[in-house]
Each structure stands twice: as structure tokens, then as C-alpha cells.
Amino acid sequence: MVEERPGSWFGFGFCGFGQAPGSDGRHQVHSPRLLCSWDRGGDICSVRASWSYTAFLSRAGRVQLSGSAGGALDGCRDLWASETLFVVLRDGRRPGAGAELQAWAPSSALRGEPLWAQTVTAETERKGGAGGETRAAPLPLLPCARAYVSPRTPLVQPLAPELRARRLELGTEHALLLDEAGQVYSWGAGRHGQLGHGTLEAELEPRLLEALQGLPMAVVAAGGWHSVCVSETGDIYIWGWNESGQLALPSRSLAEDRKTVSGEGLGELYTWGWGKYGQLGHSDTASWDRPCRVEYFVDNQLQVMAVSCGPWNTYVYAVEKEKS
Image (cartoon, rainbow, N blue to C red):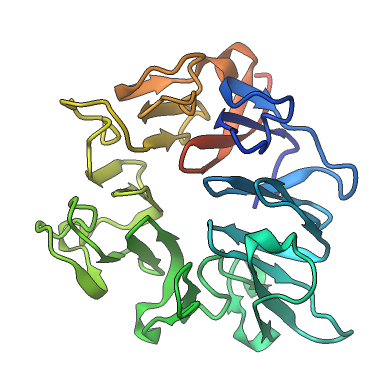
């Protein structure tokens, strides 16, 4: 969730189901387009994209779905989207009650009762940040950091408490976990090398990435069948499937898969991989097996602060560059 300098969200790529930024009927947007704020709730502060719909969270706590799924909810703090499940962390329904984690079917238009709900008390939320204030772990990791939300049943999957999870990311068939010490764990299917253990075998339980031991990581991200992490010193590590050049390595076939996005450092955005729907933001549908800077943000004197990737689209939060 973006809470820093005021800026704007931009979107580009596939929007064939009417999801923003293609509200004018276009099925593809090849370069970044400014997203407008919703009529209620003020500015967008967080975006989560699934294949056929996108979920937006405003600073006032209003969630709005756009695309194949619609509907809105108020009193929301965090969100997570998949094709089978939409999850929100909301204020409690009764005064004095803890926050409530709710799972909805995207097709429900967020009406009636959620599929599943669980109260999250202040005691189960994690302590962290300046002064040790209470804060929730980002979804799909639950606030207690001892379980996570899965798009498949059972909806809540437990984690061993000794993992001390800080962040968790889900790919199509695998998961990545970043712990408090900066170590990375992976599990799930491994047929494309996305687990990083040197084999193509599946792992049923979280397994430490031995190749990264001694290198504290700051960020992890899971693509469809590839994985990315960034060290505390700013180095990027990528492994897994390279069918579309998403590892920034030469690819024999730039046919179809996903993409990789990097927006750290000076706030410039670089993208590479599959670009059929314009999701790389280079004003075309070309695919690339090497990092290419998205010139739109440079040309408009914008600094990229956050990126949220859907399967075939990309959302970027950018602010005006400070004058030196």
C-alpha cells in the first residue's frame, strides 16, 4: 500500500474484460495511462490484478472491482485478488471488534455474505515499524504471519511459526516466503525450475534456498513460473522459466508466458518478457529478453515508487520528480 508522497497510478496491458485502464472499450493499452480516482473514497492507494479483473483500494478504505467482476466494499485495509477468490481485510462489523478477514467469490459482486470470514484481533496482528506499532502483514500472508490465503481449498494454509514470515508471494503453482532475517523459502511445483533448488522436483513444504544463504533479501516476487528477489544491497536474482525472456536471458522462443518488472533504484521502470498485450509499456506489443526502460515515466518527469503486476497487465504508482 502506497502511503508516501502523493502521486498517481497508471495502467497498461490487457483489458479485454473492461478492467481499467481500458474503460473506453479498448482491449489493449500499450503505454501507461493515468487511472482516475473513483467517485467515492478519494485516491487509489493499492492495486491488485487478476487475469479478468482488477481490484483498487482507495485511501479512504473503499475497494472497487473493475472488469469481469464488479462491486464495492467500504472499511477495507488490504486486498488480494485471484480468479477464484477475492480477499479483503476490513474493519470489524461491530464497534470495538477486531479487523475481519473476508473471502469472496469474485462473481458475487461483493453482495450478501462472504464465503468465509475470520476476526483478526489486535493481539494476532504483527508488531513492527517505528515505535513498534501494530500492523498487519500484507496479504496473502495473514496478519498473524502463521498462515496464508490460498486460491484453492483449504482456503487457509498454515505455516510453521519458526519460519517468522515477513512476506509471501504466490505464483501459478509455487510460493515464495521471505522471513524476518531476509532468507527465502520456496515450495510447490518445480517443473520449470521456479523453486530454485537446482532440480525440477516439487516441494510439499517450505524449503530454504541454500544458494541465497548469507545474502539477506529485501523483496520477493513470484511470476507465473519464475521467481525474483532483490537483496538488501539492490542486486536482483531471477530463476525459473525463460520461455519469453522473463529472466532477461536470451530465449529461443518469445512466444508466451509472463513478464518481469523492476522499478527500484532511481525510480526508473524497466520491463522485459512477453509483451503481446502491451504489458511492458513500450508503446508496442514486442517481447524482450533484456531489460528495457519504460520511457513514458522519464519523458514525463515521473519517479516510479511501486509496481503491481497482473498476468497480462501492469500497474505503476509514480510521483513527480523532486527538483534538485
